[in-house]
Length: 98
Image 1 (tube, rainbow, N blue to C red):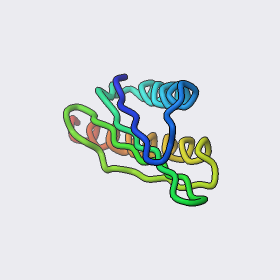
Image 2 (tube, rainbow, N blue to C red):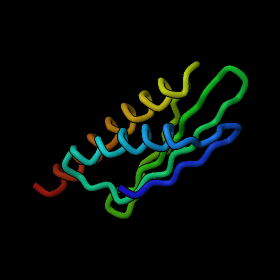
Image 3 (cartoon, one colour):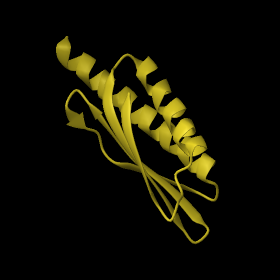
């Protein structure tokens, strides 16, 4: 999956890039090939935020935001939310094809 990763008050290290890449790769196992993703990481005081948008079948799914006190927890929550959104999208697509 192609993805872009940007940060606001966050240094994008190779470790963060690797974690986000691994987590996004897990989304491709749900039966729908995501063509691309965009993830924004932000630190605002003690709150750490991860926002992401998946582009599936030429459509942008809703931008999802996850907040936590730890960046890794925010990324995990974001991926869980994106996974649920992708699952709903896939179910809607299969329902229309019948």
